[in-house]
Every structure is written in structure tokens, then in C-alpha cells.
Length: 66
Length: 274
Image (cartoon, rainbow over all chains, first blue to last red; front, side, top):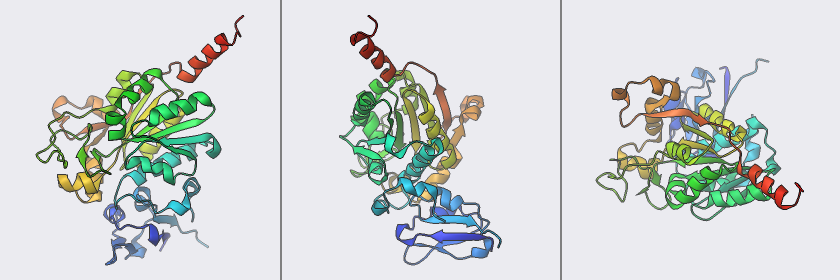
């Protein structure tokens, strides 16, 4: 896993834009209508989800190797 | 990691009230990122907005903000700019607010070349009042007041602004976030009336009526139908279908702005030339 996904859950409205634009199917909307990470290992930290999130609820950072 | 643009938002006001998937949030972020990119002083930047979904943005942005009467954002902004030309004034308006209720103010703002940056959030509909057709609802698209499709021809606000005398005219979409940020940043740089049309999705009022209730589908529609200006110019006429539209910088010209012209009058009337 080479990325770090931060989700500000109170801001998420579950519109599904991040899920639709993720090229690696990392994200999904859960039964409560909020975003969740289902396949963190596949994340390539492209930031497409963060770029188009209308609610500023998801942030992706490249993990700094310690 | 906390993003640097968060400092431009009133954190206690978030999350905003816009519907799930609404494009306004994306455009608002593009505006603050453009402000950050240009390094504008937070205390010397004023955000003025009219009435409508889009205009709620001023309430979330941590600047001096003014939420004005319907359609009248540009006159208020003109007043601010003339009273204190040092300020950077950014106007946030919607398609109905700018081209219907405030249509006259809009063309005269363009004509006077007041040094403002006007960002028009074009969601093709009056979202807040229940999805009535606006002057920018594309022909044949449905709305609550046009259940069989709008028969009116829609405004091309960019061509309108250019014809009325704006000195910077650009268009982008909520899908092309970085491009939109660049267009707004260019508008901030321009001394004169800068007009940026940001096409954004309204899944609730426009999308549901037009078989695009999924906000991601609406954004994919923007991705598939927006054509960069350079490519648009080379596109043969038969490929320019009703759905396709150009994006990019359409017009940029330097002209004397209103505050400069007005200052010359102040100098003459004050006897500076005697």
C-alpha cells in the first residue's frame, strides 16, 4: 500500500463521483450512503477522487517511505 | 494531510447545503485554489454573490463576503471596486441570476469593463426554486416549466459577454477542475471585466428530468462533449453537434478599466490639471 486515503465522513454525502472516477475500483458507497475504502492496496494515489469530490471529503496522499 | 485551501473556507459552515453530487462545490474549490495560486490577500479580497444555489458559496468562503439581491451582484461589486480600487472583487453568480434577473447589469458591467472576476455557475436550471427552465437551459432539455422540452433558444453567455465588451472571456466545466482553476486565475490576472462560465451539474433538478440523475454520468457527459478551443476551431461543422461545446479562453484584450477611467475624472474634477 503506497497511498494514504483520508476520509472526512461527516462531509460525505455519498454522491458516488469518487467511486465512478476511480480507475482502480478502490472505493465504494456503503449501506449508510457514505464512501468507504474497499481495496486500499490497489490505490495508485492518482487523486481523481479528491480532485472531483464536491464536498471536500476525501484526500489522497502518497505515502512517504520511512 | 490538511489541504492548504481549507483555510479559505469557514470550517464551521461545512459541510455545505448543496445536494449530493452538486457541481457547485467543485467550482467553489476551483475559485479558492485560483485565489491561492495568485496569492491574493484574504483581507483584500471580496466575494460578492447574488441569489440562487451558486450564490450560497459566499457563505462558505472566509473572505469579506456579500450576499446581495437577486441579479444585482455585479452592481454591488462595481460599487465596492469604485469605493476601494485596491480590493480584488470576485463575483459568484448563477445562470438565472446573471442572464435573466441580472441580465442588464451583466451586459453593462461588461460594457464598462469594471475590474471584476465574474464566475458564472451554469447548471442550466433554476435549482433552488424547483427546477424551472432558465435562459441557459439548452433547447429541447426538460425542466419543471418545460415538461416537453424547452423551446427557447439558450444564451451563450460567453459570446454575450464578449459582444458586450468584457475583456477576458473563458469557459470550463466542473469535470476539468484544473483547467477551470487556470481559467479563473487568468481572470484574476486580467485588469478589466473577466468572465468565466463554469458548467456544473445539477443532478437533482436538471439531471433527473433529463435522464442523467447520476452526478458522475453528468460529469462524464461534460468530459465527452467539451472540446478545447484549439480543437473546436479545427472541427468540421458537421461534427459540431448540439451537445458539443467549446471550452477554454475565447477572448482576451486589454482596455482601460472603469476604475482607472473614473480616477482620471477624479483628478480633473479635483483640479489636478490646473
